[in-house]
Amino acid sequence: MIIFLIFINRHYKQDVLKAGNEMTEASSEHAWSLRAASAVAGVAVSADGRCILAGTLGKRVICLDQDGQTLWSAKVGNQAWRVGLSADGETAIAGTGSTHPWDMKGRGLYAFNGDGQLRWHQDLGASVWGLALAADGRTVAVGTDGHEALLFNGEGHLLWRRKMPGVGWWAWVWAATLSVDGQTAAVGAANKTVLVLDRGGNLLGKHGAGADVMAVSVSADGQTVAAGSTDQQVYLLDRQGHLLWSEKLDDKVWTVALTADGRRLVVGASEKEAHVRTFDRGGQPLWKRYVEGSVSGVAVSAGGEVVVVGTRAGHVYLFDSTGERLGHHAAQKNIRDVAVSAHGRIAAAASEDGHVYGFQLPLQAAIALPTQRPAWDTTAIRELLTAAFNDEDLTVLCFDHFRPVYEDFGSGMSKGQKIQRVLDHCVRHGQIQELLSLVEERNPAQYTHFRDRLRR
Image (cartoon, helix red, strand yellow):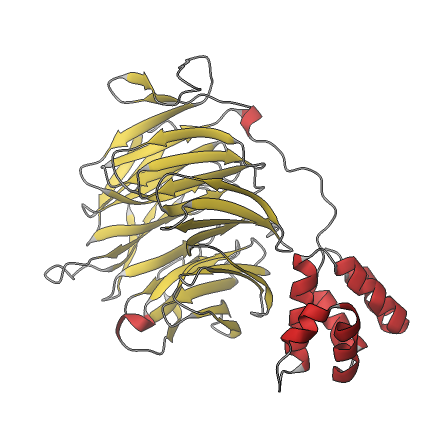
């Protein structure tokens, strides 16, 4: 399917996407742009697509409707690096920051109501690098270069703060994300860690990476966490921080996004081999597409029907769930951020060329995901293996049937580490069913006990 993109400016209309060397105006897909007074750094879209929020380096936030008309605009204390919107668009949040030593005042959080009135402000004395707003607007997660991860309620009251160990930028918190209800928060930091916490500030899980964790994403129910790091690794974790699987790519991972159910993961990589790729929850690759310029941002609709990609070369790409390209637009400068509505019909991009770009996709573009068998529940399988085998039996099983895993076992490796190795191997090579058949053969009682929990 080829869809053509029509670009509508405030003063003129011109075609910007071609099929071969031809252009057309027959498509119902179109885009608009709004010129801001300065570079645009952040963008968010409400769940229904009716509101779009943009943050500028000119210390201003702008709220637009789905047709690109300005609803309101408000001044903030410094550059609006990060923005967020509640599902209904009635709560807007901006996180400000600065890299100018002479201009460090006004760095923090600014919350607005649906009419653009300032509801509250928190001066953090640090730049906001990670920001997330829960769907109901009642919880805000923040990561700063002040070595802190923080959580606020919808009235701006601090719920908890966690200091990151480290010196200088080694303790900066690059990314923050929240579940839909705000009960699960995850942050990624320069000290090579992913932390998962609840709304009360209790540490649920922790996972160590090999380098800076630049991106995190969490499923709607908070049960699945994705992270990407600059040592070319992407990780999928459960809510307790247990590794479900990891994948080493050919390039640094700057951005990740999970679908609402956590069953699809979109990953953006850059520098050597600029591309976007998707995985299922078991770690199996689904599709990979090369793009022009390092990937600076990705966003995915709730059901995975639409994927939006922005690059540092100024390109915006729209793909469907199968990786087929729905649209493309070339801006003049770096795309700093991208966002998409829950249903996938409205997308937006923020560019350093001073524009907010909006995209409206026709209903037929929102292609439903193909029917799939339920994914394996790796948490339940891990528990089954723990209950079914002692350390010696597990080692023998791997020697007999999963020799590459056995050869990777190190001296002093715990039973839990061995289980994770064999589970990771079976997920990657499509051998989960073989593994479960062996468990049923060797310990039928435990297999029967866990059988009904093995699929999601």
